[in-house]
Length: 103
Image (cartoon, rainbow, N blue to C red):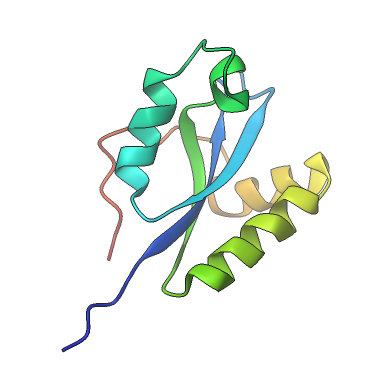
């Protein structure tokens, strides 16, 4: 039996929700921890702007589709990105770093 791979596109926000970062990963929990640990670091965009609060995610089984979606979202206006987040997370609640993704 072949293992189904999982990939995630995600949006993390700064604590005051003024800045967001969009990424893709095959391990969302690990990636969120990396963002959290790099907060305040000027070496990365997410670190520099304290983007470590998960506010949105989508799951893919095909990495090419995940990467295409990430690129699509990165090309959107901030207004459209806000609309997307609010469509699934109207109050922009921050998912806990220990958040368990539903399989």
